[in-house]
Image (cartoon, rainbow, N blue to C red; front, side, top):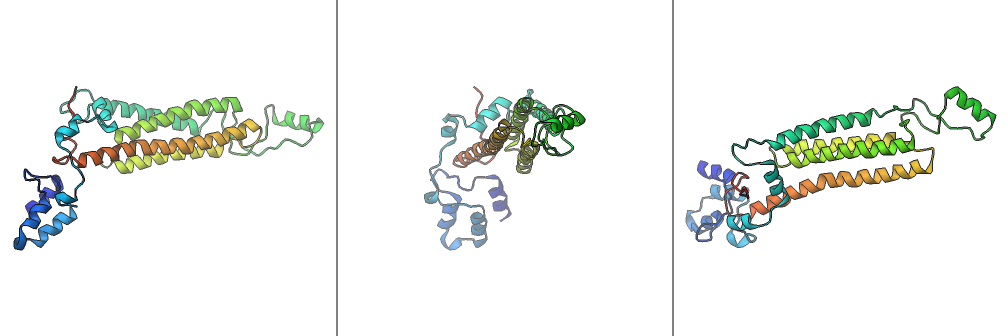
Length: 263
């Protein structure tokens, strides 16, 4: 019984033997000698009969297929290669984290800072407006406390450059860490950090002053929603498709076994 429990943790319970029988098929062939405890263990491990399986492939078929996105990532970074002296993944991950940290901090502390008060220009543009502007200083425009001070042109340029650098660095982190042990929590928290950055930029984006700012804010919000979804879904979908393909292979579980040969 202990042997069965140990095997189902480390072996593909749906692999076929030379007679095209799975572990569940062999279990049912025992007839009156069936052991209910073994049956429960197999059912818990999601073991199936050969007739219930989707079309599996051999290891040779798997290795001859076109590389998946995860395979291409592993090949590029040298993952699963024993005694690999070029630890590219670690280096790139460290650099991506440093870039994400710097750009996130720059986003929270933009050049020029934030307005500390609310201000709305007077309705008339006469003497009252000139006197008011002279007391507050030049460059005053309609704003609210907490919004970024930068001019629209500088603001758009800053958000485009800094936001792109932050987004790409976070996306690089997500691509590298997915599939690693305990990566799900890190993956989700990193993606939530991306969401927090976009939320901060959206909340401090000027909402009054010109049509360009209004349109720019709408476009920025649209971009953040789409890019955040893409950043989460592409690596996740690629990994799920890769795992689904591996489960169809008649071999032992584990990425170290299903490693593509180097060309």
